Length: 288
Image (cartoon, rainbow, N blue to C red; front, side):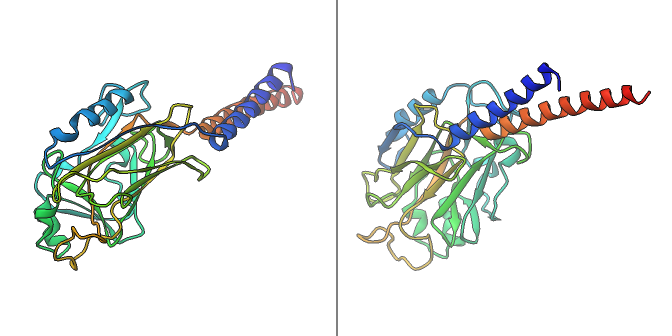
């Protein structure tokens, strides 16, 4: 192997070592943004906008990535007032926004509060939940757990990714500690856990919680626990002292970037391919 070939292989090895260090190293405290408001979007809008600003502009929409700056947002409202159930995993935003959603429950639903009445056979829910962006909300079905995974937009889930920050809007958080977000790195380690603050009115309140890494943290997965009980038909008045059912609205997160270890493996592959081609070229010449 030529000295140049050796250098390429060494670079690949160092890249993999660095990427593994990034995904399993120590983490600093994340910068958090949180507020519990009333039933009006304006009551939490300043905090949501501060989080957006900290992630960076622009909102990259459906543009293929990875992009050098900006953020992604999902507001669930593209279907208008339609009630849209889906199974798990839910990949409706996988290719264009780089997000996959899974739940240990049956699946998910996007619907206005009146649609929640029908899906969950509970006529009280349209009076329980409010909306931040008109007009649909999002929820798992038969579970209160949602896991969010990240991929490079435009790759249809082929390239795993990480984000540096993630936040979400919630409605009708009544009990402190009932609704939480856990952030995980690529090795499955918990980076950070945060509690969504309760709203300040009894029904249709809006709350926001978001966190951004300030020490190079890279988030591969976010686990959202929305309320302490899955939404269902059995609550005449869900707002009681021990039961808290919660729905979700807008999700906001930084531009997904390739996982460090994925980037390292790409470098390894390129280096090995170059070495192999050069070795094959030498063998071909020696046989002539």
